Length: 193
Image 1 (tube, rainbow, N blue to C red):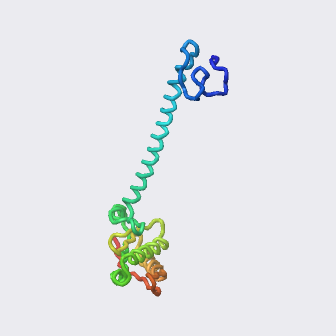
Image 2 (image 1 turned 60 degrees about the horizontal axis):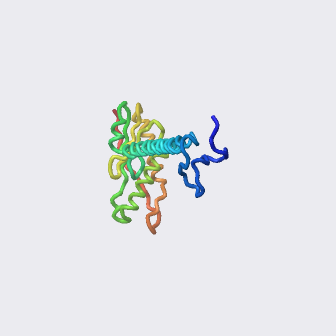
Image 3 (image 1 turned 135 degrees about the horizontal axis):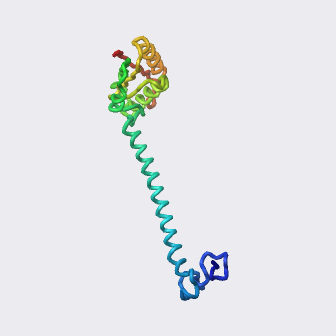
């Protein structure tokens, strides 16, 4: 097949081009057999390619949004730990459970405000996360209540882990707005089953 235009490096055949650079078929199909096909097929194929690309981008954006939604649905928005529903759903094997409660949390909120109370909760959650093992299940089930489940663990193992977590929280540096350091502490209950 040989093109009917005399400038092979040009994308638009000369029989379809006019002086102003705009497209217009100035010749009959007999004079330029690819003119009609070029005018309709090339734009149509570009539109189809562009639409397919947009659909792929939309699918990727939807997939990312779905993954983000799944993470948000399973985690507490403030601390990033598992939320109550997800925590309870992951329990199944026998083991030991620690229930960790932030001490004097109402006093933090009343004295420094809820924004500083939120900061204290995030710091406590970070301390718990830093001292945890991948097999532990950690969540936030209430305002200042953090459960930690140890699958197939004994009471002694859980008590030892609880002491480690208590110590990590006690070492957290919490500086409320324009204030001296404020100590954070937790009380821990243990159940085995």
